[in-house]
Amino acid sequence: MTQVTTTVSSFDNINDPVEYQYHRFPNPIAVALICHPHPLYDGTMNNKVVTTLAKSLGDNRINHLKFNFRGVGNSQGRHDHGIGETHDAIALANWLQNNNPGLPLIICGFSFGGYIAIKASLQLKTSLIIAIAPAIERYTDCPNQVTAPLILVQGLRDDIISIQDVDAWFQQITQTKYKIEIDCGHFFHGKVIELREKLSNLIGKSAAIG
Image (cartoon, rainbow, N blue to C red; front, side, top):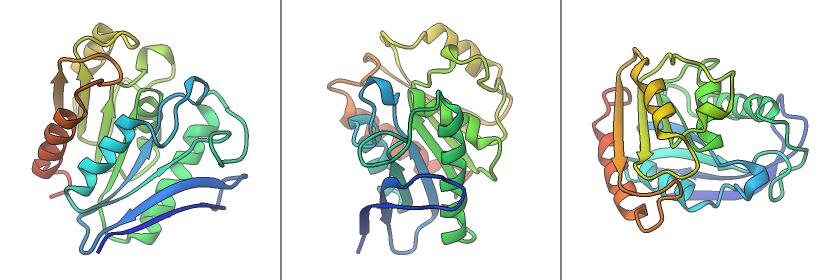
């Protein structure tokens, strides 16, 4: 039976308590951290794309933790323009690995959270990165390479993120990479079922965690 914990707790190397939801499965095949969209634009761990991503992971028996960035919901602290958020993501990923020894680590995120996931992955032993419409063109410090296989998901009518910039970034990635394209805008309105099906299928086939 799946165990779900929703609470606020303190973690090593994070100054303030963090609100999170943690899903654990019998005989999991991997563990994942999910980062949500921009905190200053109503991004939370309950965002529908984040929730759909979590369901795709659950479809594949992957333990996963989604959390509210500092200053969001019941997480304490203040927004730190990606710096503190990356630090916190790394600390939470380390906690996940310590509590799931031997399981591959997946770092995931949507929009601003995709950018954070990409940055954090470079400082972790990451087996797979999942970036949904990552806000890479808005941050000059976004890495132009990754150190793990990458799944990129992009809406073909994204009205928030530059599709051209994301595609140019994706083309220069030399790691194993996959792309899912869906005919929708940035927030995947009316397309979350398609998103879940395609992402769940590709995660299940990924050699990085199999």
